[in-house]
Image 1: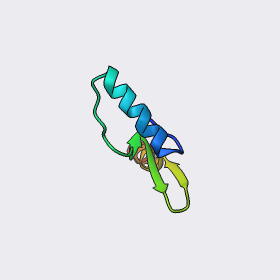
Image 2 (image 1 turned 60 degrees about the horizontal axis):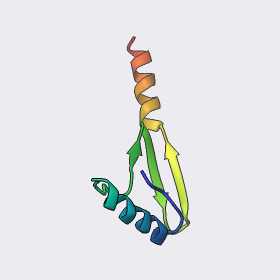
Image 3 (image 1 turned 60 degrees about the vertical axis):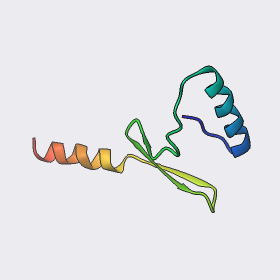
Image 4 (image 1 turned 120 degrees about the vertical axis):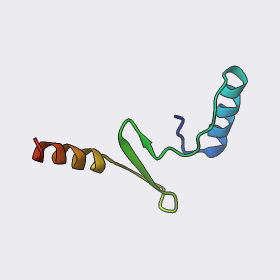
Length: 64
């Protein structure tokens, strides 16, 4: 996963990495390591949530 404020710099880095490694661009991350990622590009904000993980964990506790 690659992240940065300047999309041009991110694109340059990706191009350099593709020259050295076989890789695929999977687009913007929506979830990684169980953490959901939500973006508000207009307001330049990034939110992370583990809501589904917490809800699943609570559900498992209730059914135990």
